[in-house]
Amino acid sequence: MNFLPESMRTWYLNLITPVIKFFIRLEIHPNHFTTLGLIIQLFTIYFLATGKFIIGGILILIAGTCDIIDGQVARERGIGTKFGALYDSALDRYAEFAMFFGIGYFFIKHEYYFSSIVTFIALGGSLMTSYIRARSEALNFDCRVGIVQRAERVVYIGFASILSGISAIKPYPLIIVLIIIAIMANYTAFQRIMHIYKLTNRGRELLTQDSDE
Image 1: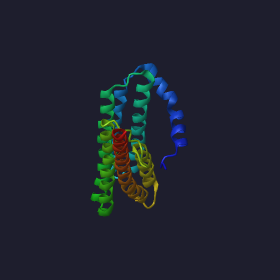
Image 2 (image 1 turned 90 degrees about the horizontal axis):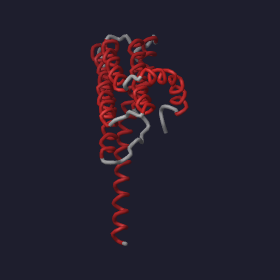
Image 3 (image 1 turned 30 degrees about the vertical axis):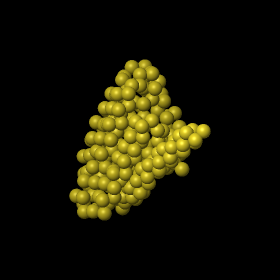
Image 4 (image 1 turned 60 degrees about the vertical axis):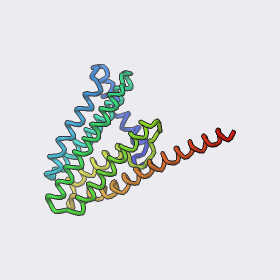
């Protein structure tokens, strides 16, 4: 199960492919897009914290697009590096923190205390989901399982922010999405823990069988 259909991912990637090819011709380094994505995301703190959800949501989606472009440019040009992967991962975490911080600040300021708690639970789940994958890959395990990954979080929060900006009952579209992410991101973290648990147990079973033989 995936909260962002593969057809939607493919459609959007095809949509921005001409932009990616343009940047490849310009030979812009992928790390520049990674940095730009974080800078844009930092601006969302102000817009989300002050309730300017339409602008904040648009900036979230633009920053997310930068995150797609950096990876595509690195692959197409064959210049991906271990440092680039680390840099991208680190700045992604800062970007997510900025996004959730702006939303949480708005909720606290306007006394949506339950929603502020939900926001920080969603942040915790998001960070743990990413951490577990990174730690697993450092241990040489593939850990891409899970129903809510970074792409889903960015897309849903971005569009929910825009809807909250034009809604007569704002910020409830955003609150609903955050509740879903708070549950599903932490569930995804649990899924990944169990996935690695099964892999390590399977490895021990194979070692036991080999020793018996």
